[in-house]
Amino acid sequence: MNRFSTIVVVVVLGVAMLGLTGCNLFDGTDSALHARTDEELIEEGNLALESGDFTASNERFDELLAHGIARDEVFRGKGETLAGQAGFRFLASLDALQNGVGPYDTAPVCFRCASLVRDRPLMVQGITWMNRLGSPDRSDRMARALMKVGAAVRLLLDKYDTNNNRRLDQYDEIDFDSNDGKTPTWPSLYQDLVTGPAADGETLEQAFLDLARGFDGRGDPWVLLSPVAGQTASGTFSASNRATIQAVGDLVDRLAAAHPYYNVHVASFAAAIRLLDGAE
Image (cartoon, rainbow, N blue to C red):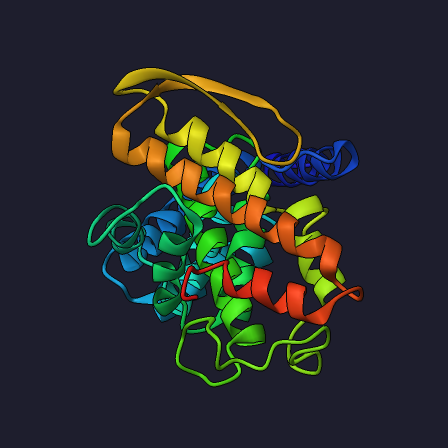
């Protein structure tokens, strides 16, 4: 065997050995490139989200999900994109809840968020993605809670505002099965908003606790009790933030006050529903 033949044999044997051991010399390089591409897609998605280009951000996060990238950054991006498409704006929601004519600690103020929800089903999808976060931070908790408040009051208006003036008043024809063909029945609605489990993973009770954990940090020491389970939420809260938490709790209390009248006394049920936004 000449020298050239010997070299060929050595090369062939080397390749064969690599194949048998399952080794790929380019595995490390491929993984690094793939990881870098994922990070770039996340960055591009976040930049598009910040600029309000929801179509572009949706494409980036959908591509990541198609790659099987199940990370909080992706879930957050997808959730905030869908909520943004539905009309949600974090600062606009806070402004609606904490400015304008008071009081700010009762249920009616929550209904100011309804106009910020153009597409309720899309908002619900956004909340669902936000509830997939494994380690939500304070901003995540505040965002998904405000999303839920907006979706909840929009649902209540869609169901019971029969004269379409965006209020619950004496001119609405409220009964036990109002708009059941277009919205959930009262038992389903009550489960989703109050008792749980919620279809999107976030009841108003959970929104109350999310706001308490998210707002905690500045202000005066305070202890809050969640409206359903009576869970303690202690922390330091500004007066405005504390009022927002209490407004959500009051909305739950008013829903709970209406519930015993369902399928029992229609006039009392209708009166309790109208009291949700204080229009009457």
